[in-house]
Image: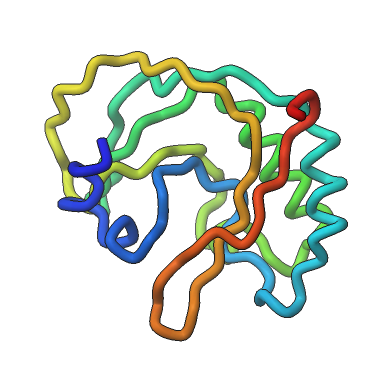
Length: 145
């Protein structure tokens, strides 16, 4: 999947790992209260999910849909309630759809699905002045040591 994302998702080349977004955009780095993020994330249990289907948006964009989506939506809504100045995708979409972007094109994937996964943490990434992304901190979900 990594090579496919590098070829078809420009964010992969800038350091963004494969992920299901919880909230973007988020607060500027200097305004992030890491203790508050840690407490919020720790209140949500780790959970199993599957990347179950290949889906497309008309932009065009190809993504994998996680099932169940509910735990991702619960995290998104909790973060948004705590930081209401940062609505998901700046409020551009009426409905938030959890997804893992594969490429910025309509791709015909020959992936062996479903892919079983375990969400055990929320990773805060931030962008530097050159446009590169890196991990700032990992926040474990409840039940993960």
